[in-house]
Length: 167
Image (cartoon, rainbow, N blue to C red; front, side, top):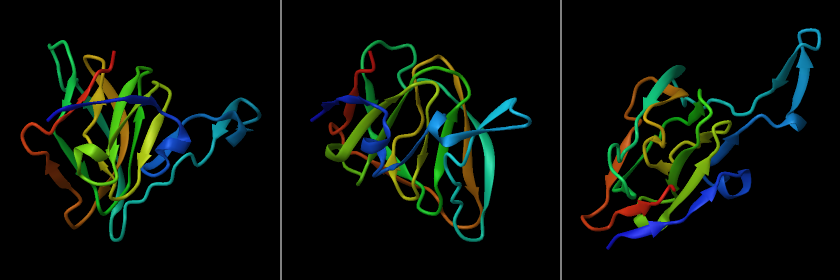
C-alpha cells in the first residue's frame, strides 16, 4: 500500500544519520587572496574508499514525473557501499532528497534542499537517485572511480511505493 511521505526542510541535525549538509556557513569561512575571496573550507571530505580515485562529474537531472501532475513515486532505493557521494547544485533551484537507514518504504525520509545547499551521502546510505523539480538541473558530484561493485539497488514490492507531494 502506498503512503505519502512528509518532506522536511534540509538541515544538518536531522540529515546527520545519512551524511552532511553542504552549505556556505559564514562561521566556517575566512578571507583569502588579499581579502577578495571568502573561502568556505572543507565543507565535506571525499571518501572514495580503498584503491580508488575521487572523480568529479556533472549529473544533469530531469524530474521523475516529467510531464505529469501529482506525486513523485519512489519505488526503489540505491546505495554506494564503497564510497561517499556528494551532490552540489550548480543552479539555485530547490531539489529533493530521499534517504533511508534500510531499504524499506517505512524507513524513508524526504528532505527539500534549497538551491544553495548540497549534501554528502555517507558511504552505504540508502537513497533515491537524484530528484529535481526543474525541467533540467545540473549538479557537481564527486564519485568513486575504482574497482569493485559500488552500486546496490533495491526495488520495493508492487504497491509499496512512497509518494512525495513536492508542492
